[in-house]
Image: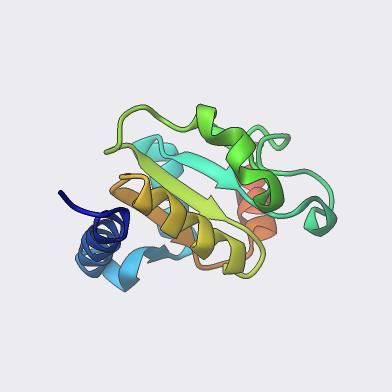
Length: 133
């Protein structure tokens, strides 16, 4: 029987292997992020802590499939995650610090198509609003 540590190690190895197959290890630019949201139907998680949100969060900005799941209380939002572990999930914050942490958590939970916006989420919200006018 495997110990918990062996299971965790195997899951982390599997997540890293999946990431190495993604361009830029799963970090996406603005154009790819908009494509994932609009064409693929990705779930967008805005994980900025409340103190870092200026103006609207992604959910309030009416970005399709967007949820505001602030990092400090992220575990309170696990029930909104897709049941399908193959679902595309895009995570964003201001500089990627919190988003990259959440990416690791989701991959450890078995999600395989997790990406991080390599840009500021405020720019993504502005781009969304510019395209929906």
